[in-house]
Amino acid sequence: MADDKEMVGEVYYPAPEVIAHAHIPDYDAVHEAATADLAGFWGKIAAENYEWYKPWDTVLDDSNAPFYKWFVGAKVNIVHNALDRHMHTAVRNKAALIFEGEMGDTRVYTYQQLNHEVGKFASVLRSMGVGKGDRVTIYMGRIPELMIAMLACAKIGAMHSVVYGGFSTEALLDRIDDSKSKLLITADGAWLRGNIIPLKEIANKAVDRAGTIQSVICVQRTGQEVEMVHGRDYWYHDLMHLPIADPNASTEVMDAEDPLFILYTSGTTGKPKAILHTHGGYMVYTSTTLKWVFDIKPEDIWWCAADPGWITGHSYIVYAPLILGATSFMYEGAPTHPYPDRWWSLIAKYGITILYTAPTAIRGLMRFGQSWPNKHDLSSLRLLGSVGEPINPEAWKWYYRVIGHERCPIMDTWWQTETGGYMITPLPSVPLKPGSATRGFPGVQVDVVDEDGESLPPNEEGYLVIQSPWPGMLRTIYQDPDRYVQQYWDRFKEQGWYLPGDSAKKDEDGYIWVIGRIDDVIKVSGYRLGTAEIESALVSHPAVAEAACIGVPDPNEVKGNIIKAYCILRQGFEPSEKLGLELREHVGEDMGPIAKPATVEFVDSLPKTRSGKIMRRVLKSQAMGQDVGDLSTLAD
Image (tube, rainbow, N blue to C red; front, side, top):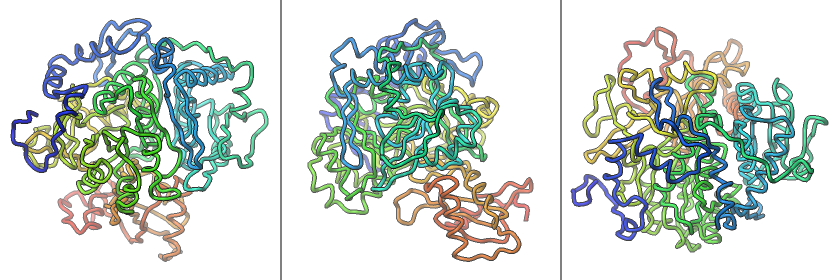
């Protein structure tokens, strides 16, 4: 967008020095070049910035769309570019990861040390019979061993499946069973708000019922007594001290299209879907997006305050920063423990230069006022970022003013587990509008369209669509290619567009404003939760005959959305406040605390279509006091 054009709405222009030092000072020129020759654009980036064992024959193969392939014929391993190649440069002596635990313990790993640990653990995994194509489930808190485990899997060609450490036995079991993992890597526990999350206890219950797990490796973190099953369970530290833990493990030569990992995300049916990403395209896309959007420089200390168990942590804690040779900071615990200035004290202590977090965290910290951040020197910060859900303008302005002191551009990024990396995002050199994710990353063509795929005029809400392939895209839903096509490509198959499942509008400047989900997925604190999974948990309680869940705006403006549940009771059960609390706890035990409904309303019937589908939009409209709209498909 040319700066001399008058822009619509509230606009924050970048400082001249920000533009002067940016990797991409002119967005329009780069975006036009990328759009004109997509394969040439990505081929040049891939050739100039990464080491390949063998170059590709074709940059983009779209002959079997929507099953796109990138860098076809190339041989590579993402770990070679994240670690191995740095051993031949001065980067090997640089800090790769700075870690602080919730209790204040600290660790620093140089690239050399991290490579040493990853090599040792890769040798351990190989000695246990784990190899190329095998699935390994990882279930632990935000600690360096999680990163080491992921990298060791990738190094030997195994696919990691990381399960968020806040998930329950049932959720973990579902993901182990679906992936048919042969090994589970977990920890005794995780620290959160001064309490221990009993990870090993939860894992034991899941493994007892899982059919495929042969061995369990347990990291000692919290130190409490845990049950270790003889012949199945091994302590991580014991294995790492054995002679088999050879730091000089070879890195498996992979095809660019070989699977790197699967990661489960909530779907509109009860079964979580395993998103599959590959070594080559994901490597190129994640690291290029991080380099350009956050303008990563050698001296930066980057803090992506997400959990490695979500895609944000995979892409922007584990892989992209290491590929770029950057220094990352990782903090184990809660933002407000023991006091509401924990984050601000860490920024001052470590000289963090870029903070990337979720609107939920920003809103949660806003509640405590600005006296807490004002106690600390935040002058090291030069860029701020937001991820997980649209950020409301009030939170954006507070973040910009109080944390960034009106000199740090905010990169409000829109993307998904499925996309691998940022899709709609500012660059530091681009004018910003509070609440808008701005425009497509160079080469990513996005639009807002109506039911028929016609481009909508400014300020009209419609379907967000992505109109061109990109290297970081998911390749399929693991073991379910039909669902991949049906979920993402069928809606606009004639045009060949990808449907993310979000509604949006664009303004007169072409800036995109993402509004929310159009399918039956609720975003709570930036995490996607499937309504069907929560409803299944409710119906598994003996009192509940039928249930429906919706997301409504959090009145406290902390979580973005909260879950409201509607339940029809079985005969013999009466509505009561006690039963409502019991149902909330039941969901928490079944799925994890994040999925607990904020409220439970008992009803006699639910609005359904004639084909029997629950019309959640009707419930949502009623809950928010809005017009319920077209009820022509309502059964009664």
